[in-house]
Length: 391
Image (cartoon, rainbow, N blue to C red):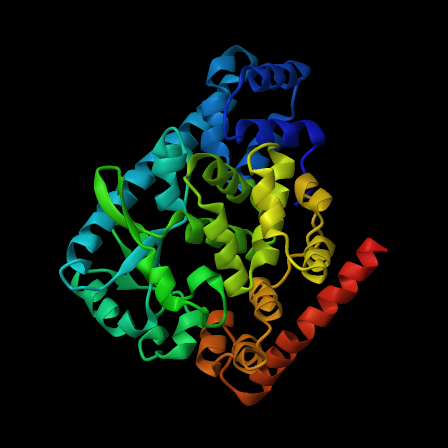
């Protein structure tokens, strides 16, 4: 997809800002007066996950926005609100059963953020409800979901268990048009956490839409938001908007976050995500926090080389980096050679059944060998391509 024009991108950034100041209102009005390619604006807003926010921000400038555009924005906002309410009701059904069954879970990302960070829940659209669970609880959790009438979209995941479940699979279960996506990898890493119990001790309960919901502590949630954004090469502005709002509005203990990132080896991904966010929306992240989180020089150079801030901000990233990139940073940061063989084997040689189902290839030696070869050489190809584009 072509990058949006500077004017369109600036308008989206302004509409996604954590706080709507008078200066922002004035700049938005100035951009609208200049005239815009409305189809390109809507297309970019959809891609960036900003349609409801754009609808909200342009309400006061209705006379400068064509009626058809206002109608499409309102429709997107209504759909987002309806989806979020439906998701909340379905989550309540699940939590009512998970509590008595003593199966700990944490609600993370979209639904966890929509109610607490945005002025209206519908302003933060999301596709599914993300839940974090412990791998050892998977058999009981699967049985519970099936008893509640949730349907699995990945039947082959049933027999998978143990360590590989932790960082390979995210099964999805659907009911009433709402999808629960179950994650077993704390912080999105393909290796065990240094303090797995610490993550589960951090759980808090928040009231979201009248429902008491278990969530991660602000420090673990913000770290997860940053690693998740890097996993997807910062492809959507809504993920950076989440980080900006979270940094401004949640009571983050920055010293605890720094210690968490040091312990888990993720100062590189977290610091880079916060740095980019600060460039998009100045003063959204405390300067002292950025200084405390500063990663090792090599990690910082790596992050800036593969995800240059200017390319991210201009939406001109030519390649998407591997989903497991934060794991590689964690291996560097934790400096434990014993972690590498298992993590790298998991990344480059996942189980054949998972490969065949996920990539829709025949479960025969030749197709599988070709797939594994591509997994091994893909990082080298990306490195070569990145070197060529930066030359």
